[in-house]
Length: 181
Image (cartoon, rainbow, N blue to C red):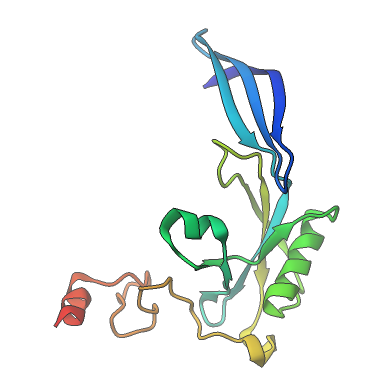
């Protein structure tokens, strides 16, 4: 565990959409060990995410969006993700409500603080404030209503015959063998 951490210097290397800084820090561990770090860090602003769930149907609502980082990482053009966005000066709960409405058409009646998430703390200062949002599919605009529950690309829907009966939606060895035939 780290007992103390002191930022010794920070130099902006790039000031684009997300500034990239070179940061030097000195750390002292609980056992007295000292070490220095010198890393690049993206100074990403704070964000908020809505985690909408339909308890009646037992599913969550995700959006499919293009992400350049995913394309560079593994060639994926679209990824499934929670509705989310940058705070842009709003409070985290207001941002979660805004993004949920913009990306899904669902108006959040209630929000419950879920957790704060650091998606890539080894190279980014981004923090995402996450909120549980109960919703009912029948109150969602029909033009955007996907089949529920959503399954990741290449995986069967948790309700498909190929999915496990234990509720995880993961295919079993038997269902994989059937697909190969």
